[in-house]
Length: 89
Image (cartoon, rainbow, N blue to C red; front, side, top):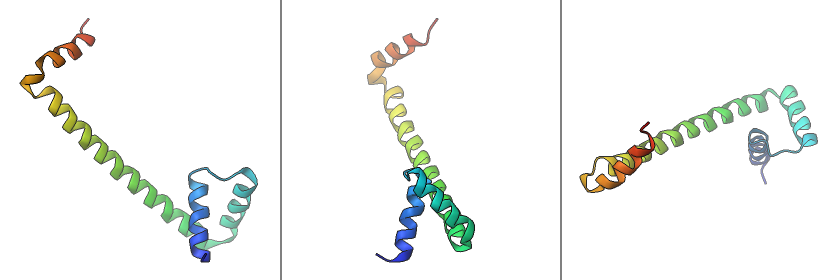
């Protein structure tokens, strides 16, 4: 396996907290001594953040679709009333 691919996999394990303590400490030492690894770690963190934001946006859109199907459809009036009963005093 190419060194860069191995480095990406190690960085992923580090970011996902899947490394055991000795490997994590060695990786952190490598981060301190290798500017390129530090830059790659930074950008991989950014990519993960963008992916997470995209996932949240898609999940919110899906939840909105389900909400509209359940609460905007007059045929589901009985279901709506049952749900609203949970929130009444």
